Image (cartoon, rainbow, N blue to C red; front, side):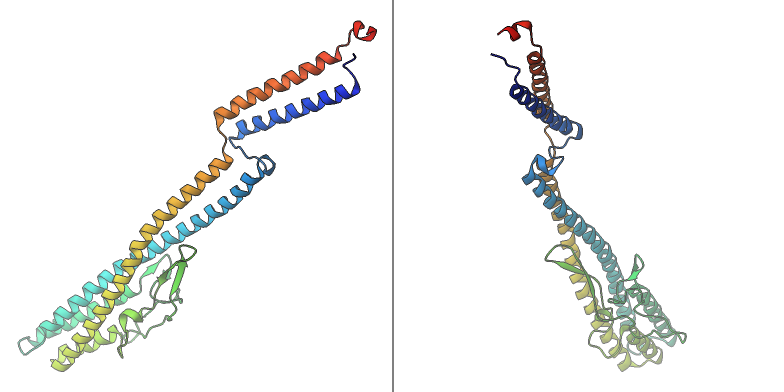
Length: 298
């Protein structure tokens, strides 16, 4: 029987092409280190990989905003510690000026100290992180308060719209605040007005004015402490969120690796077997092509 018919030849060539394709596939995997080099390699794995890469991108964006929020809130927390300390010092000094014991010179020293504390508070509340003010609401490029030409402090120049950033699909955290929540609250005047009026009362020995000013400082102190507590709670949660996002990203990367990355030892073994099959197919068609005289005589 003659083996070298056209049909046999086509079947043999098809076998060679199949073996060559299999060899090329494993060679590509070994060279790239990837199991999926095109969607055709594994459509389901390729689809999962696209979704996982998108998820990794989202997680990385949330991680960046979490880090940004932590940086800003750390600055806010530090400023609030200063504000609390300065308000405590102001109350202590003003309380010492009460009564008839203090001399005019000592009251003047206290008044000057209160004015210095007002200057320090103005600097604190104008806290700027990476070019934006954290206590101006959404008016982040405008300082919340300014020192005017006459030496007084302006009214609030920001707005009441706090800004927040997303740190997850379902959670955001405020990173820009309305300063009046600290400086004024429900009082008729802000803390700068309170300190200015208190300094004047201390100089004049105005006991009622001093008492009113000290009470105003106590309310400002309470507002600052409550505000710092809330910021501290958010700041602590951001640390946990950073760890959570890192763990989620690592899990997503592991899933991508499982779908995309090749087991190199297995791939090399499969490539060797594919090469053997390819060489065998080439050898087979070569043998079939060598027709002898005996083949024609049969």
